[in-house]
Image (cartoon, rainbow, N blue to C red; front, side, top):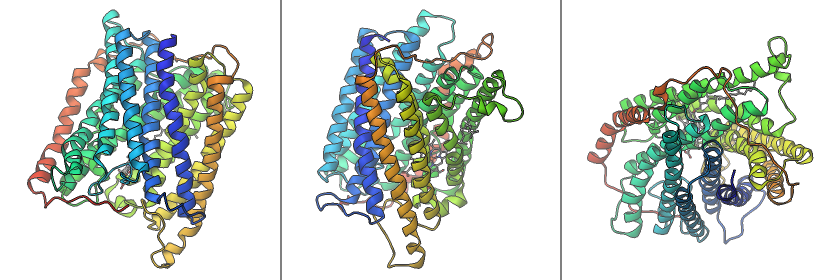
Length: 542
Ligand code: HAS
């Protein structure tokens, strides 16, 4: 990659590392406070650091890391960005940085203690919502630059199939662009006027519906870059092949179709939405599981083919042949393994009856620490172990690789302990989004103590792992020996197969996606607006 594009990607990664460092520290503090091992100084309150943790980890770390990775992937496979596209990307970057700084300042001033989902009627300072809007508009500049780059490649290579990873980057951004319509509408037309005081009340059901229209595809915006690495990069690292290029493209397209019209599965316990529409969106939620099952199938196939080609015998002999000592494979593999129980948890959440048991309990917090905090984060760690040295002209030495393996193990074990404790105590009814609750020493609540301690132990291991990770990142950025670390890009097992052209007909897929969205959302949203109860004024508790 040329120097200018490397610089662009690295600028995103530096912010991502800063965010995970501070956000991770807040995460540790939360587990220690909840388990009553420490009390915070009076200048900080639990909900403030909970908000900062959520925003820094789930919004800032992910978005900056993802854009850094998407730029690198597209540039690697379609060539350097033009001057104009690079400028556009930098404009987006600076908007995101300003938005991020503004948002964090508002949180630290105690003016935006609304958690990362900023649910109404909790009200923040208007500048917090402006900060969110800036981050999103910034991503539009970045998306524009990447999509233009892809289109340019397509024009110059008429009739050819685009590089798989560039196609995946564009699919991820198409999903993002359609999804953010919801959050932009609620932030611009509901939250900003309400927080400034231009209107007194907010329609809560509408704001949450628009939020979750965005909120669920948001989780696939986090997941799809991890899938890009699983489908395209991991096969090359293990010396194998991509099982099927067409299957991978189809999986990404199915995410565009099914990840958006499903937001009601986050609102199954909310009033004001009829059961029929919740039922329809639950059915669609089960449809969005299919591309993940396809992914699991394709990955097993890739691993088995490679293991057998190395002489693995019997039903599972191939398993032992995989390169376990290479962190570029080991870290994402741990992410995949954790995604099996994490995905099963998602299926439980999506099942209406079982959602009644787990909703608003710390089970859900356990679910998303296994998905985003483990599956996605471990894959991102795996990516950074080769991408950072690649961009900085350095190499991942054997010694650094060894430390990175320990970092991965610590993160995996820490996350399993912490999330396991969250899942179990959630089943007992332990609520999420609360500091500490004993319900006047109720017998069930007193059993949570052990789980809270488990969370603190898991959280502490995670923090140690995070420190190791940051040390490695500093090393790989500035001190590791100079050299050329590869940017692995896999090839399809059967290269004679050409993916059907329909897979790159974006008009068809975006058209079907909008049809599904209109079907799933039009009537319920009209209903929410027409039959709205009186709106709510804002509340600031902390
Ligand atoms: Fe979720 C809540 C349903 C996936 C993140 N989810 C959340 C929240 C977050 C989140 C952040 O239906 C909380 C939001 C909040 O603050 O309120 N989720 C699902 C479903 C899936 C799912 C059905 N979630 C994710 C992913 C996330 C994520 C991915 C982040 C990246 N989720 C829900 C529901 C709620 C929810 C409800 C609301 C709960 C409530 O009541 O509040 C599915 O996409 C999962 C499908 C996944 C699979 C697994 C496939 C496995 C693969 C690995 C293969 C492994 C290999 C390795 C090859 C079916 C691909 C081999 C290994 C060997 C050992 C051999």
